[in-house]
Image 1: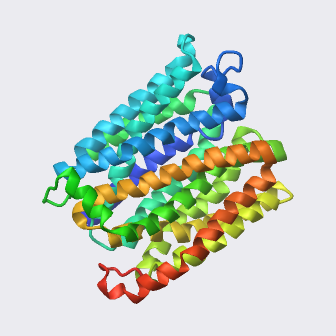
Image 2: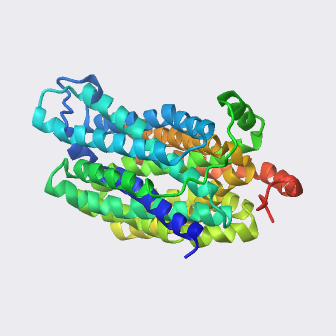
Length: 408
């Protein structure tokens, strides 16, 4: 096996482990926050289970937004990736372990739990974002490399949700313990990889200026924001919607979420490779519009079976959009600015997750689940329609873009 192929496989395994550990918590989120001390009588941010769950998720992704750029800039400035991935993975493992210990201590207020969650998010986003940047550094086609990242993300989510549901039924904090163990394994695995970061180094100011002078990066950032918003919406609102509407236990909820994540995972690599051949416009624009329509379909599904079928369709469409969007970042970024450029994409994605939690949770709480599905699905359709002229202009100017082209 060629060294790039081997490293692609290992890096994809690392992305899988990070996402798997994250998704372990989602199906049993309501049970977990109760075990961690969410109590309306003692904490104003835990007045309801929905509120406590929302803030538990928001704390992690708020830290993502703040710290992902720090990790990316440090990596680009120093010309190193692997030591920072190891550091962030071990720090994330320690934070997960600290959260798992909270119920046995019994003296930490829920606000303290949220602070631990912030620390955990600040650490784990480094492992996630910089591993994706290492995939950007590999040869073999941007769509293929991002397809490998995408299939790892999808498999981690597809397997993390159902397994997390089963672990929750054994013990509410079991997913936290499993996440801590996985991130220790991530640190050990990455420490053995070759660091392929471009040799040239730049100052932080030069990095930020270089990314700022590439306004076309705002295009994949915008799609990354909306796509991750839908994922955050399903992680919180979708989970509670399925449990309340269809009276599902955490284990069954995890299986229903897997109906999305399984095709989303398995098709990322072939559809990412396809985007290397046909360009990014069709997968991103047409795929996003259809993806939004699919989300609306989930919201009107009358039964568990119909909801599962709609989730499968949405997963297929998501697999078309995701790797092409990430590959577009690599197409447009200078190789010396990849860590910062991917950090920007993950900032947009993390803000999208926050939007999914906050907008989805707020709209669902105030106006009901039906309107929440309409808002999120409608935003996905809207961004596809609005950006059609920009993609057409990029296609016309593709002779000036780096290979592979934005549209071919």
